Length: 127
Image 1 (cartoon, rainbow, N blue to C red):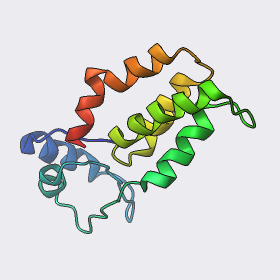
Image 2 (cartoon, rainbow, N blue to C red; image 1 turned 45 degrees about the horizontal axis):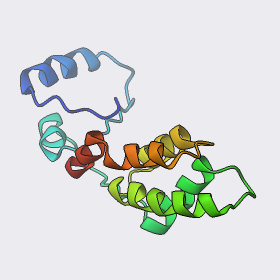
Image 3 (cartoon, helix red, strand yellow; image 1 turned 180 degrees about the vertical axis):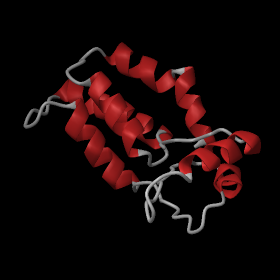
């Protein structure tokens, strides 16, 4: 189960009862960013993942946002905006890749600024 946010303990207990009918020794992997959810689920051994470093995120962003082997003057300006976008991604690789892919081959600076200033980018503060 990926990116679980439901804090309703009753629903987790119902789901647990359903899952107990699985094969002996089977495991279920659940991902969540919410420690309360992990606690409610009764995680036996939570594994906390750290985000990527800024350098790693920037490298990933460049891979997805720019055509390989091409560097232009306008691309340098876009890269400045891209660095700010990457910073707002808080080390989350899926966010970096998604935004890089979305901006791929877009050379209009206004589109990049729109993404950087998007209210959705403010949601990364919750990550």
